[in-house]
Image (cartoon, rainbow, N blue to C red; front, side, top):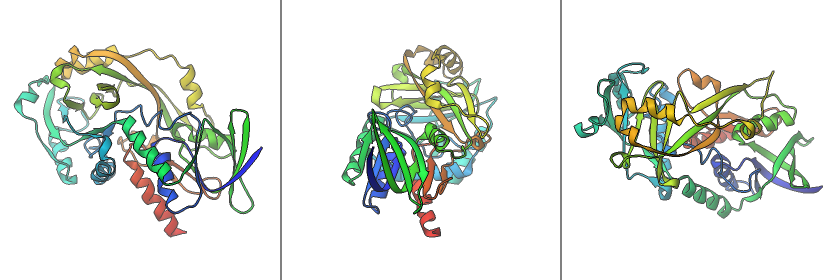
Length: 373
């Protein structure tokens, strides 16, 4: 067994892990990031709708909407080279089954300072106005997930972060000096690492590491999700459209594939389960054995009722992933961060974000934790 010592070890090489590694390297000498895949940002950081949030998606959670509104310009500035803003974005509110009316939606967005105005008539004519109450033009962008990865990894490496790819963290142990022992395995090579601080940023695998280390699990909800990749008709190629707030859908440009994604509140999640103190299912194991039979036909049949021209879209394939959220978010569709310092072990912090710009909230929480200490 090989031995090494670090100031900080980060478990998980998604966007959160890579960004936190670069952030922490500015104040710590030796920082190591460990990722079980052979490359960074290959799972949830890539398989998502690549939306740069500006508050519009959260009309029932004032905190999430406000944080999105605050983080939006910062994210756009920090990651300008991967931002895609060459399309128009529209949010439509249905006559029925929406949890907010058009008036409530507009008032909410005006309160948080998010730009919003009625869409022009030519755009509204694309919708079934017997079912849609109002359509709004908003300011919302997408990001190129492949380019975002290049930026995040380059910043991490420039900051001097060391990396261990294709490596699985097997167990964490509390040591006598309040440091943490990190047992990890790369192929047949086992390593024992001593770290002053460990950050568990493994997203859907957070509880795998906690369980393996004999620590209590965090209550998390997991969903097996499908995002359809589609070629939209010419009229929609420079548009992103979201119909909300309820059992509706969203289609967004997906820059890495030069296409669009289609997600549906009712059909994107294929199944779900909870991690609790009493029960646990390894999300990666479930993902590997779960059947992946597309529900695209159901997505498109429902979506074209509201946006008839979408029926001309051509299905390409589907992106599958495990989506993990905090169960408390179910009531108002909020996306707070999970930030749990000293969780089960001294100097072990568990972190998870529900959307890409939560990274700034995680950094702020870390600064607050330092001040409290």
